[in-house]
Amino acid sequence: MINFELTDIYAGYNNETILSGINLIIEDGIFVIMGPSGSGKSTLLKLLNRLINPTSGRIKYKNKPITDYPIRELRRKVGMVFQKPVLFEGTVDKNIRIANKNITDDESEELLKQVALTNDYIDRSDQQLSVGEAQRVCLARTLSTKPEVLLLDEPTSALDPTSTMKIERLLVNISNKISIVWVTHHVEQALRIGGQVAMIFNGKIHWQGITDELMQSEDQIIKKFISGELK
Ligand code: ADP
Image 1 (tube, rainbow, N blue to C red):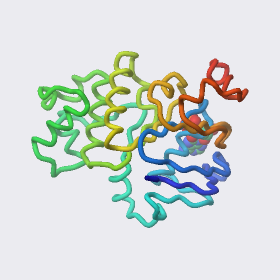
Image 2 (image 1 turned 180 degrees about the vertical axis):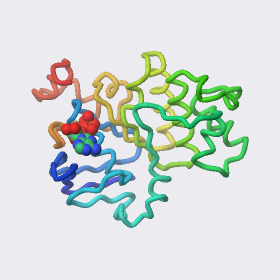
Image 3 (image 1 turned 30 degrees about the vertical axis):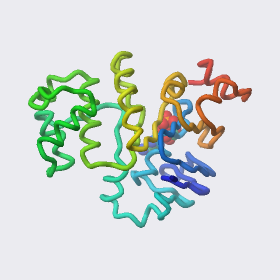
Image 4 (image 1 turned 90 degrees about the vertical axis):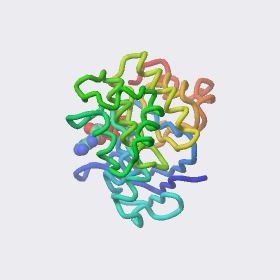
């Protein structure tokens, strides 16, 4: 099933074009957007829940123009998790309920379970969490609106290696039920999480395929990216 279809997209900020001529189909499952810093990955992600709008071109979500969805409905269906966890002052429970006031105690317990936090976290204050735990609470908060797709913008960049592995594993599990579009500039991470991948370079789609094919690529830019020459 196709989630997003981007046709001839140009986008940028203040008259500066960052993305040009993007044609992309994003299907169910995990879709990785990979590329060096500053290549336009976040800009591409932000188009998918209309944090920004393209200057030209068309975007469809589930076969309907993305602009046909009321913005709040779109952002419920297409949830986003950012690089650094941002929590409101208060308990984990409060933070989870901020996005969806109507969830039951059972549902909030289930959300904690999904992000691999035990029940006793529910009454902890935001001040008593590690960065990795805080990021998992942010994920639970995003999941509370029952999104169809999760947009992840370098969700592990603020985390230590152990928390990174933990959150990667649980996101890969979640991707069985909820599609994920995952922005990363770590080729190792792209290889670990697997799935479809598009490489953005200088605001264009430079390469597209599955992660398994990446290491075999003879493309010079991909080789440089894998070897760490391009960051
Ligand atoms: P990536 O996610 O690949 O690191 P970004 O999409 O964040 O790249 O940024 C691409 C380019 O757009 C960069 O040159 C960056 O400075 C610029 N940019 C990003 N966000 C903004 C903004 N809000 N206003 C102006 N320029 C921006």
